[in-house]
Length: 122
View (tube, one colour):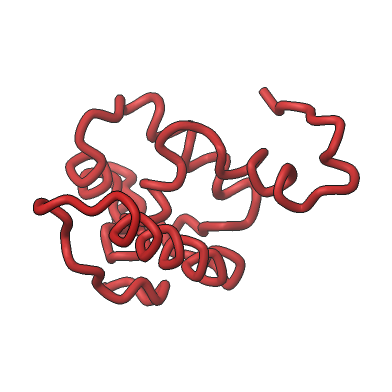
């Protein structure tokens, strides 16, 4: 269900949050950016997300033009997800969030930043 903010008409941040502001969405985008392009890889990398919720998030990201779905198997049907140009551009936001988090909320367990270019492995 789409949220409605009074500021959406005039505020690009509010409009962006309508797409990526749901729980798990940013992490799904992060993991696709890092090369986890198949459903089973995303379930593993987003430890704790339910299969139904992952499917919902991927569908929304596909509908909003962040990812494209490509089938690599017909029987059974299996797909991988690749960032579109729009999704690749969002990588700048993810990198900025990573830098902010490591500077202002650092943890010894932080993983080093791997390049989030939007170029997924095949």
